[in-house]
Image 1 (cartoon, rainbow, N blue to C red):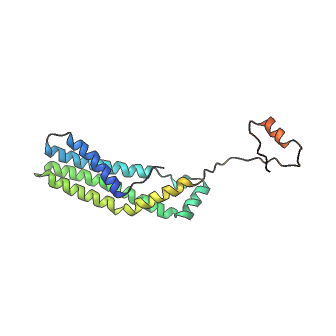
Image 2: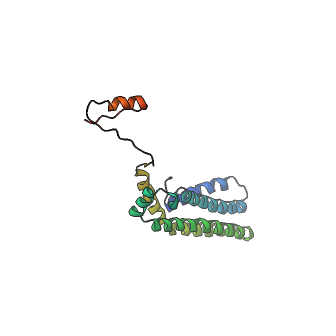
Image 3: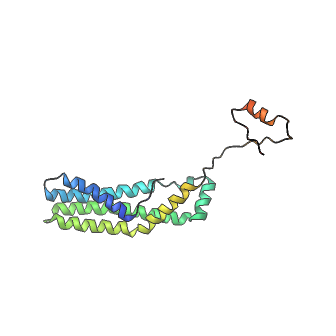
Amino acid sequence: MPTVPTADEILDRSFRRAAKKMAEKNNKERANTDFVRAVGAAVHDRLVYIIRGFPEFEDLPPFYREMAEILFGIDRLKQSLGAVGWAAKHTKMVGNQLVLQSRKADDTLVVRKRAVARLASMVHQIDKDLRFLNEVRNVLRKLPNIEDTFTIVIAGYPNVGKSSFIRRVSSAEPEVAS
C-alpha cells in the first residue's frame, strides 16, 4: 500500500511536473496551456494511484475486513476513498475545461492562475480524507500477515520420538518447548 500524500504534497509534485513541461516550451501561450493540462493530469493520476493502492474491502479475508471495521469503520474508509475519487474525476474535468478556455483566451496566464486555484481548492477540500487514508495505511501495514493454512501439533509424553518423527516426515526443524 503506497504512502498517501497530503494535499500540499500532491500539489507540489504536480506543479513541479508541470513546470518542467512548461520550461521546455518557447511559446508562452502554449506553455500556459500545457501547464494547465499537465497539472490537471498529474493531480488526477496521483489521486487514482491512491485509490488503486487500497484493497477492495469486500474481497478481503474476514479477519482483515473485521479489523478494518473495528479500527476505522469500512463505511468511513469508503467515504474517504469516494471523496478522493470525486476529486480525481473533477480535477480531470476541470483541467480539460480550462485547457479549452486557455486556447480561446486572450491572456492564458489568467486562465492558468484560475486553473491552479480551482485544482488546489479541490485537492485541499479532500485533505482530511487524504490524512485519514494515510493513517489507515500506516495501521494496516502493521497488521500481521494471517494466511489461511493448516497447522499440525505433535504432542505426547517425553522421549517418545516426536522430534524424530517431524525430522523424518518433513524438512522442518522441530521446535522443542522448554
